Image 1 (cartoon, rainbow, N blue to C red):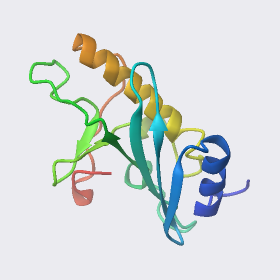
Image 2 (cartoon, rainbow, N blue to C red):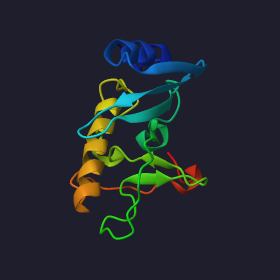
Image 3 (cartoon, helix red, strand yellow):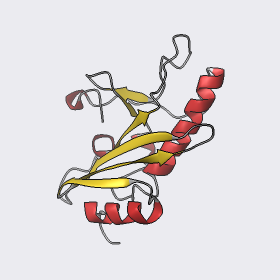
Length: 156
């Protein structure tokens, strides 16, 4: 594939690699997927929403990253944790939590990547770290949690 993957490319890759995920195209550049992931102990229902950028848009991984939310079971905050009540998430104005899956400064992800090869695997890793954190209170996923740009609000 040359250039940035289109939403059609993203839909095809997800269908091929993650067939248990149901896809819904929201418009000509945006899609949402919903499906199960089981990192270690539990199966989680997650939602991924992504808008493919146009080639002439300013490419900013922080602003254009996929929005990943755990739908069920609900993520459980902990009152006493050195990592905060729920680590590595972006809080929405409505109290929802989108997962912080990568540090945009390290170039771990870009809009040139297929979600099926990156975002889903990053989500499994995040959920594995979450299960460990729930058991021990320690976040083992490492990473740096950047603040979202002020103009973008609280969610990516």
